[in-house]
Length: 372
Image (cartoon, rainbow, N blue to C red; front, side, top):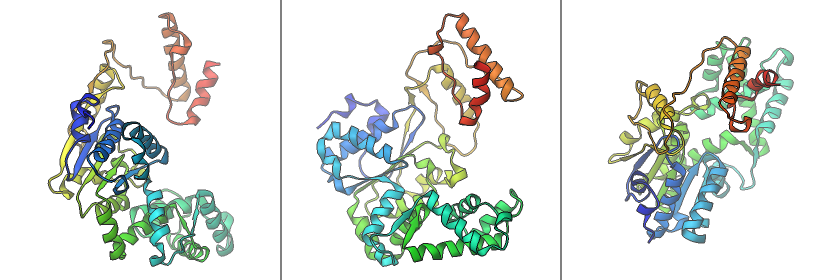
């Protein structure tokens, strides 16, 4: 059997080779989260767990493919039969097989975002007296999606939006949502949110399917657990309830998707929901220099509702501290970037040694014009 202690640091090895039972791995940024998950998969297979009885839930199909490719290098072709993918894709697989019990044919179609908007747009055009004055179809689709992911009535979510956007009529939005649901039923279709909602319904409303899947999956592993919403957390809890071999990997410091339904309570309450839960903290950072991590640790030190942890740098670095600039607008920001580049050039750095990082593409225009 592979000596994982020679491939991983002590904390990573403890997580990858942990015994049975619930496990929460707090994988801070740059600490080798994916590496740990990959070696966990390899360890389970080498320990005799049939690959097809392992479920790996991720937030992108790319992440699932990358993990399986890396695990295959360690454990061979056996990993190919692991159930892996996003919550949406795993729910779709379940529903293709057992969705008939909910009234769906195995060949149901899946509406993408454009399909969804078009369908909602058609409903608005044919049912609203003055479609041009009505809320845009994109916003209606967002309200319906929020309601599904938060398990709340559409009218409640629409009322919340009423305070942000003029012209939102909760009753009208509720009516359109009902027509949208009926139209999907007529088409034998689900949108992406329906995959989660109906996947959970399948487990909650169909005992035979639930018990069969609970028995089948010996280990359930979840990546980016801090980004799960209520549906995804409950889906995981139900699937892992029988064998209790659930491994949640995530970082409460990186819960930045609450705007799309992520609930930080899922990761914070995980040890309370799973009695006997073991917690492993990955705090050795392989990405950043000490001065950057010092800032990160200071910023998060007094954050409310957190698991206490301290990032420790693996890389060496200079004693120079990061700079924080406060600027008035985009142009002032671009000028500061230009001056910083000038200073670096004066110290002998090449342009190819520098990078400008930004949050959204729209922010680059002023920077590009300033640098031109």
